[in-house]
Length: 215
Image 1 (cartoon, rainbow, N blue to C red):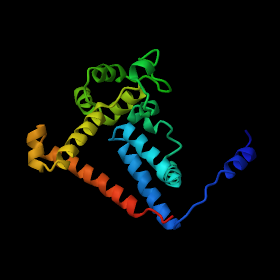
Image 2 (cartoon, rainbow, N blue to C red):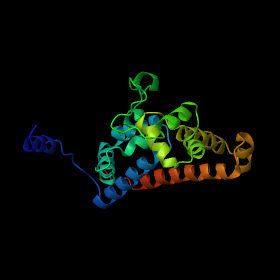
Image 3 (cartoon, rainbow, N blue to C red):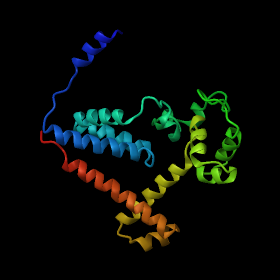
Image 4 (spheres, helix red, strand yellow):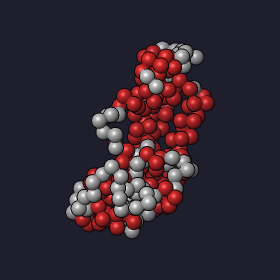
C-alpha cells in the first residue's frame, strides 16, 4: 500500500474528540506512563482488562494513551521489550511450552554470547535474575536481556506481582504493616515497598479519573 492510500484510509477514521485538549493530553501522559510502569510489575491479563475497559468506556482515552505511549518509545531500539520476555509473553494465550522456539538454544535476532548457556541453565532451575547475576558475577541487566531473548519468563517480576497482590489483599482487609509482615513472612522493608507501589498505582488511577474530560 502506497503512502497516499494509507494516509487517506487512516484519515477517514479520525475520531471526534470532546473536552479540553490540555486535560486530554495530561490524562494520556499519565495513562501511558502508568502502562509503561505496570507492564513490568503486573499480570499482563490485568492490563488487557484495563485497556479493554477503556475501549468500552472511552475509546478516545485508549487511542490517546496509545499515541502517547508510542511517542515515549525509541524506534531505534526495537527489542526494548526483551526485558519482559518478548512481546509474545504479553499475550493472554501465550503458553511457554507451546510457543517455545523449535531450538530453545537458538536465540532469534541475537548472537549467542558467552554467558547464554549458564544463564539459561540457572533460569530453568527457577533462579531469579538477581540470583543468577550474583552467581555468575555479571550484571542483572545482562541476565535480563539474555533471558528475554530466549523467551523465558521473568520470575522476579512474577514473584513481585504475586507478592504485591497478596499484600494488597491483606491491606484491604484492614491489616497494618506489621500484621502483614507476620502473615506473609516478608521483611518490613519489603512490605513497605509493596505498599508504596500499591499506593502509587492507586494515586495514578485517582489522578486519571479526576482528569477525565467532560463529555
